[in-house]
Length: 225
Ligand code: HEM
Image 1 (cartoon, rainbow, N blue to C red):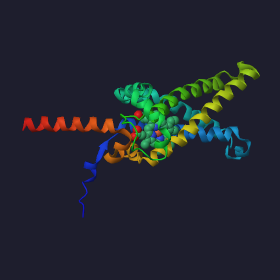
Image 2: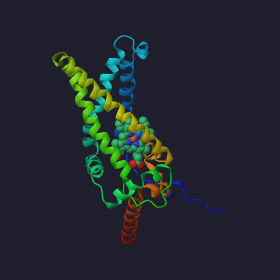
Image 3: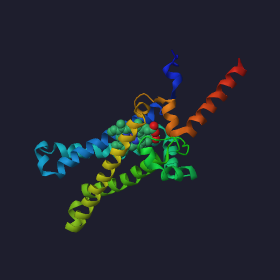
Image 4: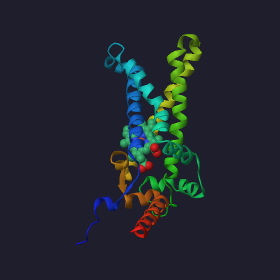
């Protein structure tokens, strides 16, 4: 019978505690915004909004959502910078990877070009989240503070931009969850570690880099002894 390595040897650190807390803040505030937003928008759900509770919750979640980039910056500046740069920088392998996206979407990674810490799909997702969050926040602030001075056309435009941006992020979330579960990435955001073999399927270049670093550190330690 094959002997399995202990869990930690088969795993690789993907996210430290601080970025995981920031992500939990982003995900929970977004979900509250989405559900309270649906209740405000959809008359059939209005019964779920007694008094002003839903509107109040929507505003509290909006403040948390807007605080996310600042919290990320102060809690883990290197991680925040890395995310910003990686999400908007695409190399030749990324473009080749995107051409084969459908193969990856159906769980086939055999002929995919090797990817770094973020694969090209994640880069596109994260960059879209940042840009679309900008339109959500801008239109939301307009609706919150400048409603009376807008006039009916301005109000309608702000509402349409706000609702369509929210819809776009909700659709992106469906894809984000799908790939999280297909490629068993959830533990990266819950415990911080992911299975090395699974990570190889999505981020081979990154796994190789981390392993080289680990080997160099072990060599340094051995030389010291
Ligand atoms: C609600 C359930 C959610 C789950 C289970 C989930 C899961 C995950 C996982 C597992 C990762 C790490 C993927 C990797 O290994 O690289 C991740 C990263 C990320 N997710 Fe989510 N996510 C959720 C919601 C959201 C939402 C609502 C947004 C945006 C509005 C979002 C935006 C991001 C971003 C930007 C990253 C990259 C984080 C970084 O590198 O610091 N996620 N998510």
